[in-house]
Image 1 (cartoon, rainbow, N blue to C red):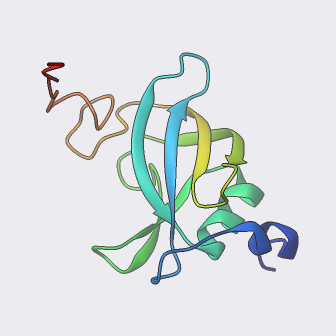
Image 2: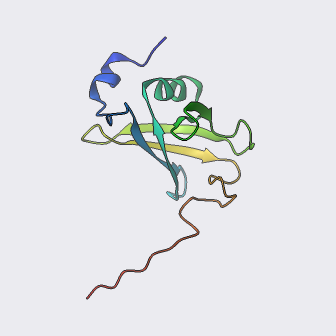
Amino acid sequence: MSLDPAIAARLKRTTDGLVPAIVQQYDTGEVLMLAWMDDEALHRTLTTGRATYWSRSRGAYWVKGDTSGHVQHVRSAALDCDGDTILLKVDQVGAACHTGDRTCFDADRLTADPR
C-alpha cells in the first residue's frame, strides 16, 4: 500500500523528496521537535498511529520510540495551506529529543533585541 494519491498530490517536497513535520503535544500545544517525512513515512504514520520519520543522517526510516521507548502516539495530522509542512499532534511518552529533554527546543533559547 502507499500514501493516498490525493494526499500525495498536495505535498510540496524538497529536492530530496522530504517534507518537514512539526511535532506538537496534542493537549498542551507544546512544540516537541521537527523531523522529516517522505510519502512512505507519512503513509506509515497515518496507518499505524505511530510517528514514523525519515532519518537524513541514517538514511533510514525510524519509528519514534522503537529503541528509546519514548513513543509518539499520533492524535492528528494536518497539512499546512501551502502543502509544504506537516503538523503532527501526538501524545508523547517520555522525552521527545534524542538528548533526553522533553522537547528539542529546551536547551538553546535565543533572545531577541527589539530595537
